[in-house]
Image 1 (cartoon, one colour):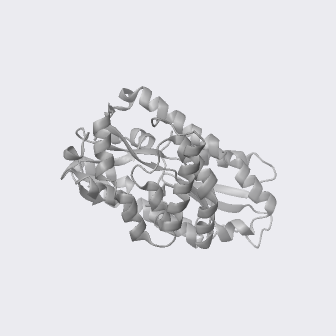
Image 2 (cartoon, rainbow, N blue to C red):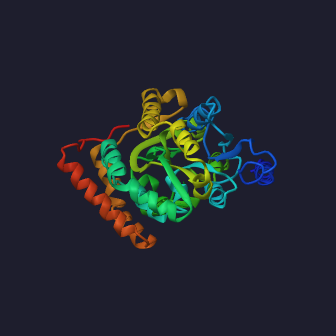
Image 3 (tube, rainbow, N blue to C red):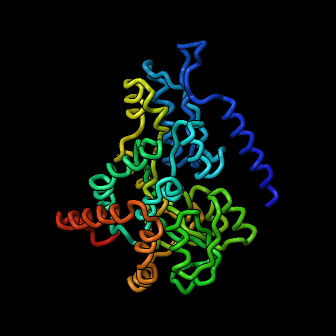
Length: 352
């Protein structure tokens, strides 16, 4: 991959520039100066996640009560999600947006949310996340020096490839990209594919060189990142749901004046607004996949059952491997699923 040295040089320069800029507090010599709020993420322009951070910066800058200078590093300038999370925990950046697959490096219990076929509908996802899991994960993030400001929905995860992957048999021995998340790797192994772990920015070069033949991703990221040019076949397995997270460094956040903290939170879209933005974008892509170079493949009942059957042991394997509060999180999820079903809100089929 001839471009890789340039990529690493850019990352090095970005990180060096970031570090020499200080830790985000106002200068003692100028008490009226703005506090710096550096935002880190891996997004693509034109996606809801990119626009969320642009919206935050715009809302804060136009408010006369704001005392934050928001600087955006949201297109992967600072490296992988794992690297960005490390910088956030150390206070080198102050805010960040991450997929669940990236955030599992800090909170292993998040792996359970990515277990194959855990959720049956968007309504069920919303209910369990909001009513049963948010408070618990706020606590877990706080214990690791982070503040969970919001969930940042990514959506259903699906399989993509240079050729169609409609059945586990077609995935067998196929070189598929996985993230570093345990759930991602267990899924690739369960379907009989050859696992090739790599960060998201390496996907397109690896498809071009033949290092991988496909992988798994949310629809919006897949479509807008340019992956369809190299791997145009998208199979709607909907085998996992990625909610993502918006985080702040806790020490930095706690030292902000109460008015500034409230202003920061109010400048983000609400949870439901963010969800709807992702779901609307997903609907537009699915309504006209050819505009993005996507060859879309649905699954019949037999094909769907085959994927579910071959991955049914993954959730327990995740719980056994992560330890911690995995069992407690799983019990919360099961309790939420029972209550949701009892309320009669279960949908017969998934949407999006």
